[in-house]
Image (cartoon, rainbow, N blue to C red; front, side, top):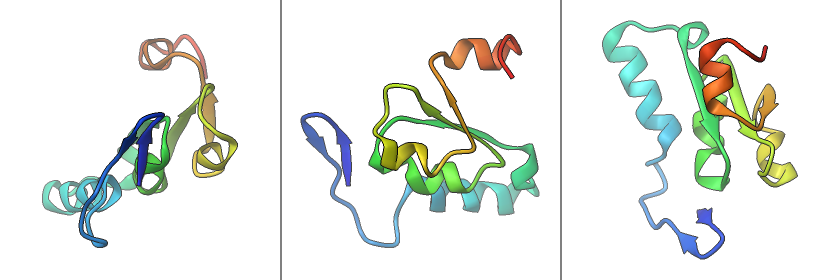
Amino acid sequence: VVSGKLYLDFMASEVSKGHAMKQIQEYMGIETSECMAFGDNYNDCEMLKQAEFSYAMASAADDIKKNALYVTDSVEKILRGELL
């Protein structure tokens, strides 16, 4: 998957940030409604689908934004509750 302007991530097809997040959720008994994810590139798409509060960065391509519920230009502001 593309992970940056000049980067590619090579991994087994069953491996993704979303799969890892799902395993952590199951192991810890965490619901997707209790999760937040931020992403800006194609390697984040599956993770964005695994969290109810999913944010694509404003600078992300439109294809990435389609995988998130929200778009933001600041992770910090979201975490501080300044933008909702």
